[in-house]
Image (cartoon, rainbow over all chains, first blue to last red):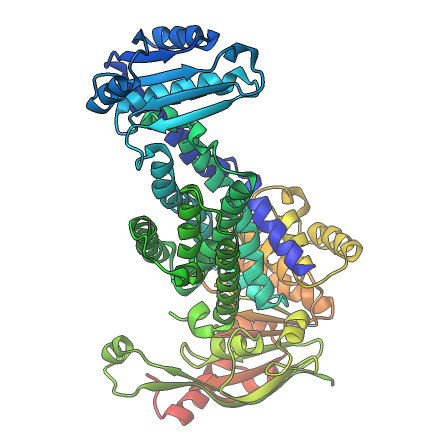
Amino acid sequence: MKLCSLMKKEFHRFFHDPRLIVTMLLPGILIFLLYTFIGDISHSDQKRAFKVYLSGESAVVGVLEQQIVEAGDEVEWLPLDDEEAARAEIEEGEATAILSFTENFDLFGEGARAGIVYDSGSEDGTYFYSLASAVLIGVGMRFSIDVETVKADETVGAEFLSMLLPMLIVCFIFSACMSVTLESVAGEKERGTLATILVTSAKRRDIALGKILPLSCISMIGAASSFLGVALSMPKLMGVSLGALGGYSVWSYLLVLLLMISIVPCIVALISTVSALSRSVKEASGYVSVLMILFMVLSLVTGFLPAIGDWGYAVPVLGAVIAMQKILAGGLLVWQSFLAVGVNLLFTALLVFLMTKMLSSERIMFGK
Amino acid sequence: MEEIVRAEGLRKTFTLSKKQQRIERTGETRRIAVNGLSFSAYRGEIYGLLGPNGAGKTTTLRMLSTLIKPDGGDAFLAGHSIGKEPEKVRDVIGFMTSELKLEGFFTPDYLFDFFGAMHGVEKDVLAGRKKELFARFGIDRFAEVQVKNLSTGMLQKVSLVISIVHDPEVIIFDEPTNGLDVLTAKVVTDFLLELKTMGKSILLSTHIFSLVEKLCDRVGIIIDGKLAAEGPLGEIAGGDLEKTFFGIYRSVKGEIV
C-alpha cells in the first residue's frame, strides 16, 4: 500500500509536469530532426546518377524511377546481357546495381522473386538498395526478394545496426534514466524532501523500490523516444533503411525488446544508488557521467571483440548489449539472452538491497 | 502522571573528519555528542530540552525520531523502543525540523494524502482530519496551491499540519523558531499551544529562554550531552530562567565562555 503511494507520487510528479515530459521526449524529437537535417544536407547537393542493369520486367521499375526522379536523381536502365561483366562493373563502382524479376513477377504468383545485387560498400548502392527494397515492400504482395552484395562478407546495413544500435540503445537509456533519476533521488536528498519521507513508517525497501520501479517505467518512455528518433531518421542519415531489419524473426525482435527492457531498471537502480550516496545533484551527475561514458565505450568495444566467451552474458548491462549485437548480426541466442536478462534483474535486486541499506545509513543520509 | 517519552542512558558519538580536526585544532578522532542522557516527559505536557549550540539537543531528538541510532542506551516513545521498533516509533511521533522539507511541486492537499498514506492512515479518517486541520489552521484556501508558491508562514503551517497527519501521540520539534521571522515564529508557537490544548505531548529543543518560558511545562537543561538539571519550569527557573541556566552552566563548565 505504501509502496503503491510512493510509486504514484513519482508518476504524479512526472505526468503532471509538462516540463519533465518535454525534457523526456525532446531528445528523441531533436535526434530525429537533427539527423534528418544532417542527412538532407549531406545528400541534397549530390545529384545521384544510378546505372542499373535490369533483367525481366515489372511495374515496380516505373515506380522506382518515379521515386528517383522525384528525389532529383537520375537513373539509366540497361539490359542485363552479361551478368559477370555487370557484377564486375558494380564492384569497380561503374554501375550501381542489378535488379532482376522472374517471369510474370507482377502477377505475384507462386515463385515470384525479385533480386537485387549491389555493392554494400558504396553509398549509392546502399541508397538504391534501400529505395528498391522499400518500393518492393510497399507493393505489399507475397513474393521473395533475393538480396546479394558483390562483396559477400559485407552486409553493411545489418552490420551497422548490429554494431552501433546496441551502443546507441545503452546511450539513450542512460540519458533517459539520468534525466529523471538524478533529480528524483539526488535532488530530493539535497532538498531535504527525502528525509521527510524517512521520518514516516514506510519501510526503507519500499522507499527504494518506490523510486526505482516508477523511474524505470518513465525512463523507458524516454529511451523509446530516443530510439524511435534514431530509427526514423536512419534512412536519411545513413542510407540504411529499417528494411535492413526485415530479415529478423519475431523471436529476435522479442529477445531484443526483452534485453532492452531489462537494461532500464538496472541503470535506474545504479543511478539511484549513486544518487543516494552523493550529497548533491551536481556530485551525483559527475559520478553518473563517468559511468555513462564507461558503459558506452564498453558497449562499443564489445562489438569489435567477437572472441568474447559466454561469460560476457553474465556481465550486467554489457551481457545484454553483447546479446543484442549477436541477435542483430543474425544469431538467435535464446539461453544467452535469458541469462543476460536474469543477470540484469539480479543486479537490479542487489542494487535495491544496497540502496535500502543506504537509506538506513545515518552517515549517508544525514552526514555532512 | 503517565510517561510518554523515557530516555535511558542515551549515548551517541561521531567520528571527526580530518578537516573537522584541523578546523577545531584537535587531535581527537571521536566526539561524544550525547553522553548517557536520561529524562522523562509526561503525557499532555510540553517538555523543553534547553541547552547551548553543540550541547547534543538535535542529536537527541534525531535519535528519538529514529533518524539516527544511539551507540548506547535506549528510549521509549508511547511504549515503543527506538532501537527495537523504529517503524512503530515513527508511527506515534510527528517530527519537525528545518531540515525536513516538502516538495515544492505538490499541493498541500496532495502532500497531506501522501504522508497520510505513508503512515497507513485510512482514507476516510484522512479525509476527516484534512478537513478539520486545514480549516483550523486556515490552509483550506491554499489547499490546491503548489507548496513552492506559498508564503513562508503558510508553508510553515502546512509543514506543521503534515507532521501531525497521522494524529501522533508525541510531537518532537527541533528548534521550532530558529531562523524564522517574528510572524512565522508566532505561527509556530501558536500552533504548539493549540496542539497542547488538543491534548498532545510535545518535546522541543531550543536555546531561547523566552520560548521555554512561554511554552514549556517542564524543562531539562542539557550541557555537553548530559542532563544537568530537570524539573517543572517554575522549580527550575525560580523566577529567572536565564540566571538559573548560567548558574548551572558555570557549575558544570567552570566558565561562561
